[in-house]
Length: 170
Picture 1 (cartoon, rainbow, N blue to C red):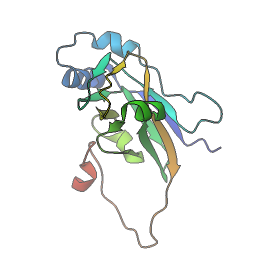
Picture 2 (picture 1 turned 30 degrees about the horizontal axis):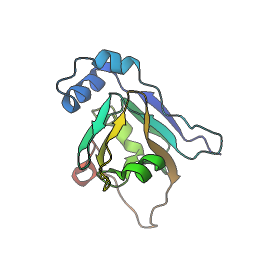
Picture 3 (picture 1 turned 135 degrees about the horizontal axis):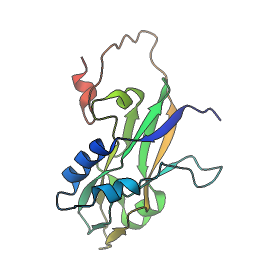
Picture 4 (picture 1 turned 90 degrees about the horizontal axis):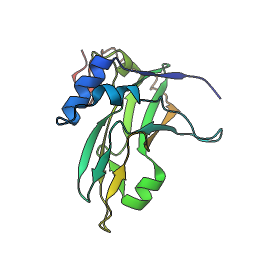
């Protein structure tokens, strides 16, 4: 296995800003930050690194939530981190990422938001199932994948931001 990345926590200030944006009525950002654990694989054969909820979350069918993970990833060039819902939650609740697959590029780490990874989910249950997550529950998984570029690629833009920011690269 190639060792190509490292997970880190974002600063408390960055996490608090995202936490208050996602959970405006919450007053426990410091407690949530202290409880953050870096994503880890459950077994030596696991491809996915589990991301854990930073708050207690309840989603009725059709409801969604944006979760600040407090995590950033320093990724080697030529690699990307893809984020997916955990398989069991997708199977039981049709839990889906709103952008279908989260793509965390290696240059996101250097963004002004410290590369803070947010994950937006929707409970798309057709059976009326309510999803309940407790702070610390694994809900998504990240898989590192190697990628290639075309022979005539000349991309030289610089990113600053998350969703949609590569379309605005300078």
